Length: 253
Image (cartoon, rainbow, N blue to C red; front, side, top):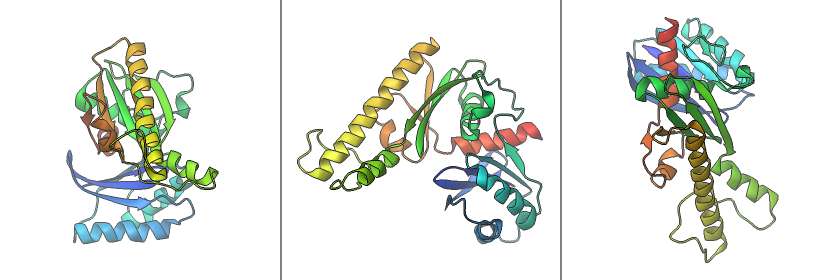
């Protein structure tokens, strides 16, 4: 069995694979201040409760939180007895990263591009609705072409509440109307439909610049399902980054 860890800015998403099948997922809050022992005991507890009497045979991770890289390296060796495999922009995955500075591309974006091309084919655009919303553009040959980065809707809601005296932080939900009749509804309408419009425009321009009007659009991330229904022909792949980690490990092996 393979244990994969997607270390994001908000959550650490763990996935257990048997072959190509993702059999279980767990989430932990991302905290750069936590130690390998704190994370390790929790990860091991999850695993042992789910798969009693078994141990993972390999551990692979991708991280956008540099302070946690050493933590999970130590966790892998100390608690799992495994040599960790890290995936990033410098990893040899059989895809070309065609941007100005390849080393600056986040591991999650590389993994999304890899999984999108291997599982769905190209050309493709991945919309990853996380702390930030990223657009990852992939050519027909599987080359990573770059993309766009937007502030995530939850982060926008938090920032609005922090920077104003009277506006509360609200849940991100579509409202019945755009013309809100109370403060909460006004904020929710602005956040949802304003964000939806921003995503639509960036997506439209991305497809146009790729010269591929039939590029596959794949949505992943925590809020993907909420927005995907209003974006037209979008494929849902909520475990795309974890699948990228599995495919990366198979490429290494």
